[in-house]
Amino acid sequence: MPRGALALPPGHPRACNGLMTKSASFFAVGLLAGILVATAGFAAFLGGRGDASGPRVLKMAHGLEPSHPVHLGMVRMKERLEALSGGRMSVEIYASGVLGSEPVCVEQARNGTLALTKTSTAPLEAFIPEMQVFGLPYVFRDEAHFWTVLDGALGEELLGTLRSRGLVGLCYYDSGSRSFYTVNKPIRTPDDLRGLKIRVQNSSVAIRMVEVFGGSATPIAFGELYSALSQGTVDGAENNAPSFVGNRHHEVCRYYTLNHHTRVPDVVLISAKVWDGLSPQEQAWLRQAARESAVHQRALWAEATRRDLEAARARGVEIIEPDLAPFRRKAAILLEDYRGGPVGRLVERIDAVR
Image 1 (cartoon, helix red, strand yellow):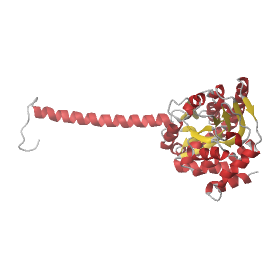
Image 2 (tube, rainbow, N blue to C red):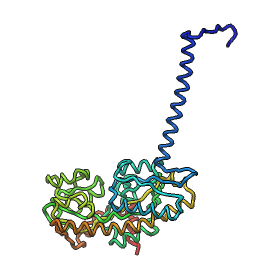
Image 3 (cartoon, rainbow, N blue to C red):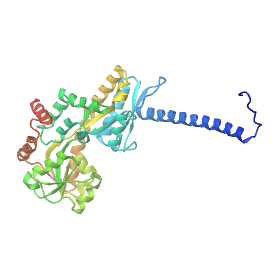
């Protein structure tokens, strides 16, 4: 007690205030510590940092249903990772958007609060210009050429562009080819699209593509498309066969034209922050497991496509296999817009792959 200070009797208001102030301070410190611990724990829960007493478990999330070929591919990745690591690593998969939509999961991965997810290359176009190449029509000669490119050095180079955005690309999953489907009018040549309102993703490349083919591009949220087709807001859309059937668009549309204008893959991603926290051996196990799962997923996708086309036929949908040459000639107009630029040079490199 300072010299000359008077001791305050117990119960004096000033004495009580002092005790209350100290108690409040201790409470505030405890609360802050609790928040920090809880936050770190939640980040560890999502990112899967694990501890020394058990296997490292990486959290993986996506927005598709558990029966989807992408989810089943991830299940194979989990199985192979456990086998390759002798049980020292595993993946815990959260399906159906329980941890957020695809953009939310990608952002969580960038922040390091989620270890693994997948995304279509389409949303990446906005901040990785090279990814625009997948939205351009007829860049790939056929499916075999597509996978030769993606499984080769050029495919690895494109995965490497993700690092600048806090992500590491592990492998490509199949998401099929996109084709036109319409309610009332069959599409056999690009001229048949003239005057039709065709739903597209909110992508400048997709909009321009439909316009070049002669249609009127109409961006609409995918969740609203069934109603838009039913009510005549649009005359058709474009997507892969599993999406056409899985979202019941084959109940409304009478024609599906297999013109295969674009091939847009899914990319399996890991947070760069989580990746950098893995040992070289753990990274090797994970990369191998991902690549083995991609082979399995592609087989599942091929089977799903065959099955869904049969389901569409059984529903009365006419499956049209047109001559692709007129579509390719129209597409050349759009590709010319990119000549000389970085995406145009990338198209030339893809075309040179044999």
